[in-house]
Image (cartoon, rainbow over all chains, first blue to last red; front, side):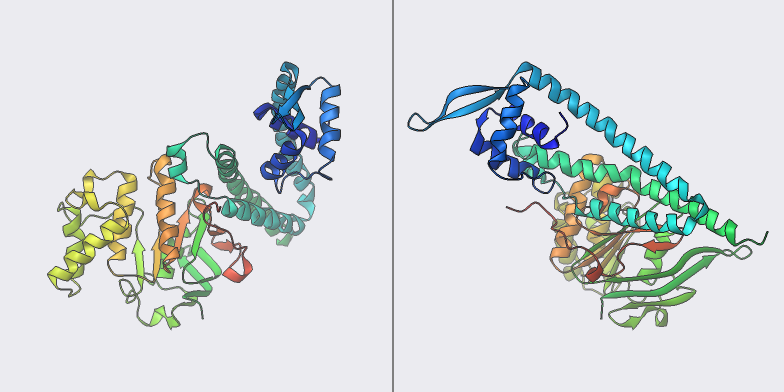
Length: 186
Length: 232
């Protein structure tokens, strides 16, 4: 299963069994700016895919007695596959970082071009670090479960830059040295 | 006119090899904003702050605070508009914290009663009022930074310049120090800080300094405006 939307939806069902409409609302709240549903009704198509793969199962009669709804909960297989997907996704991120470095190295003969790329990359890192919010200490003390996703996202953004900014600094120096070498008379 | 303006600032050190520490640095800082400059060791970040504070004069370019060229009166704006903090509280002697802050004001001609009140208020403002009778060596890293900020605040600065405010601070206490700096900015004080930690860039206009060159949005209008804390 390749769709990031499907995996994200499975995560929400693992977090709490629910029915279609509520899942669509939680999807928008949880993944705003990261993942997008093509439409609210797509949630039912995605849930059907997850059910066919044995990752979720139906729970009839969820919701109120007057308006029972068809709910969904994760199967043991769904939980296990979700966990494995997270690990695989992390490795994919590492692979992308290595790929970016290799693709940049190809510009060794054109260091000025590489420096432009590094400048943009550095700017993106600064924006990412600057945009990350400070966690609200009071919330952490009051209830550790409250706002956990926001805190994890925020800290991930902040700490990921701990490695990337020095890398940008390093890459900039490497390509500046190459650019200086090109200016030296042979 | 920006509160602080650096225009084409250059600085070199050393008699023989004349190492270039700052190259053509331009930066504008406005009232009420937090600007944090990330840099590796020996990138020139501390020099940049000293030049911005008027403690050191640039070899080229200009530094203006509220439109005045700092080269005309080096160091004169310290305590008169600009508050400069070292990375930790520099104790004058072993006397209690409150006395340390008070004596600095008395030395500038402030009457004792007024000096004592302003020192107490500053310690309260940075949330270490309870430590007023402690000696500086009894403070932990986070408290020492707060004490340094309190000393600067006794002069009601419009610009607070602080060198690596979180470097000696316990990981769990760092966000508290950052939140304090942002709260000062919300009261209208401009904050210019350096850091070697990306976590200190949260909510700030972030720039990097590499081999004396500044990278990033040199003025607020060129930066994305971000919220300091989660909303709603």
